[in-house]
Image (cartoon, rainbow, N blue to C red):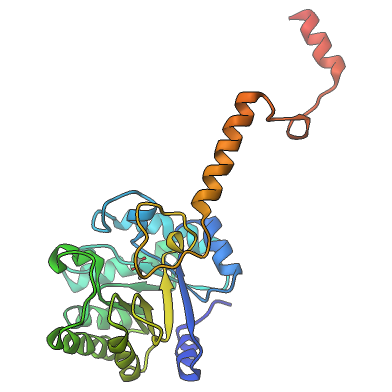
Length: 278
Ligand code: KIV
């Protein structure tokens, strides 16, 4: 049985912290699920860390559905959230519903996430009314990077802090089951977390959120273009991969790989006969 949105709310009520992690492919999702992560996000960050785009803006619905299917196939227990890409929920309520439904019907995810607060609350409400759980995302919303003027902390001034608190309440009111707070000052995240009944999940939002989310490629040290301030590398897989691959290159060049252990045998009479006759 997969984790439910009701269980996540109970975790908040019990004060039990919620670990969330992104995954983009079958093998990684399987490991993340087996390691006990209850909430997996197929983030549109895949545009940057898997597909090599400069931002999340070029990511399409088809790309998201492709990766969501792989993650769902790799998981048994985690609740999988599909991240709605740029401009797939902005144009109209109908578009938002249609694209949210694609995540559930084609992708197989159990929920969707979208960026924005009060301005998207009506869409959140309508998607939830159709039976699709929605996770909100406020603070630094990477799909609005050009509007925000870069990837930077959001909520330091009184005006923006009030707006974020109102955004969180609007999302809660609209029926969001959880809210991601990205790059929000820690004291403001604490206040928002205290003021809403649904779990807040922080990324660069301090220790007082109900849960934390990280990009799996940052956590494992796989993405080497830059390390965001909010990320902690629990491993340096890039180094392990590079060393392993260069060992492989050296062994192939030296003729020491493959050995008999990685080779298949056959009846020698057959090969002798073939060599004589051909
Ligand atoms: O796309 C993503 O990975 C995200 C997280 C950073 C929350 O939206």
